[in-house]
Amino acid sequence: MTKKHFLSAAALLLAASSAFAQGNGMAGITEATGMVTSYFEPATKLIYAIGAVVGLIGGVKVYGKFSSGDPDTSKTAASWFGACIFLIVAATILRSFFL
Image 1 (cartoon, rainbow, N blue to C red):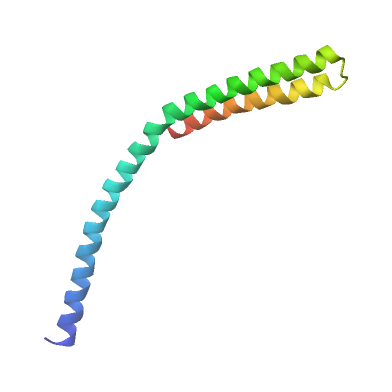
Image 2: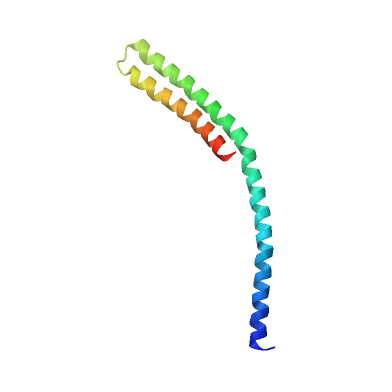
């Protein structure tokens, strides 16, 4: 074989192998997408549950501060309420963005 035939055969082999690799890559990407989207529903519910627990803990802390007459009660209430709202909004936006 001449050098020209050898280079042509190598180029053809590389083109064919990259075409096969693209098909397998698309199947892998499709499978990974399906796996990731299947986790969003349980993850969203988990984040909502964490938000509920954070809300209950925050309510108890704010009640304790309010009962003791602490002047810092409004700042504490705003921070705990903001954390709960952030968790709920973040879960909802991520779910709507990826699904």
